[in-house]
Image (cartoon, rainbow, N blue to C red; front, side, top):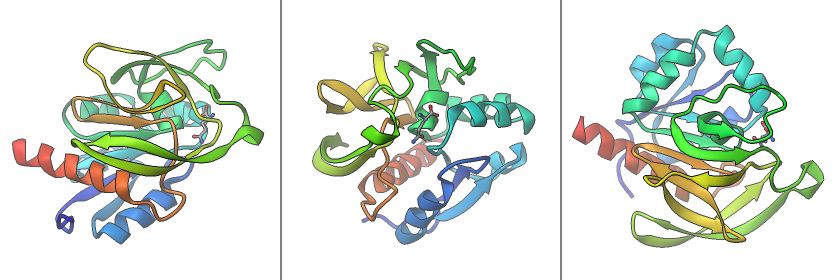
Length: 202
Ligand code: GLN
């Protein structure tokens, strides 16, 4: 495992499941910043938008004046959206009755709650290919978004029932599911490796 003690990762902490991500980053030895104001984006190497409620986060992003700073950050730095975070990164939300304005940083379309509602939440071993290595993630789907289109520059790293559920484009990454709810730090370590690589290139 790499040494992550020099890596600082922000977690958008307006709402949702940011504490579990922080816990995993601490296990892996990285520094953590709970991001609530734009200036904090200048102090971090990568950012996670956690799961939660995308409608609420959408409103709070504007209230905290973070929309343009987040878009600027995502154009050059590593950004990982899980679940609600994936919805916010997408280009388009299908059947967008809640009127969410996605950040449009990742060339995918999604449909919210595409794997059923809360009662249909499930945990599953999920094969994925991370940096050319085959791994099995412990994935939890909770009112998860389903990806309905991927752009031509988007790579799919894992599939569930033939639909991509883990995708990446440039230094952006998004997962429909959660891996931060237990001690499976595989995907977090992959994000930290991406963050280290991006920093080495900048
Ligand atoms: N269904 C939620 C939404 O649309 C996402 C759920 C989650 O992040 N676990 O915001």
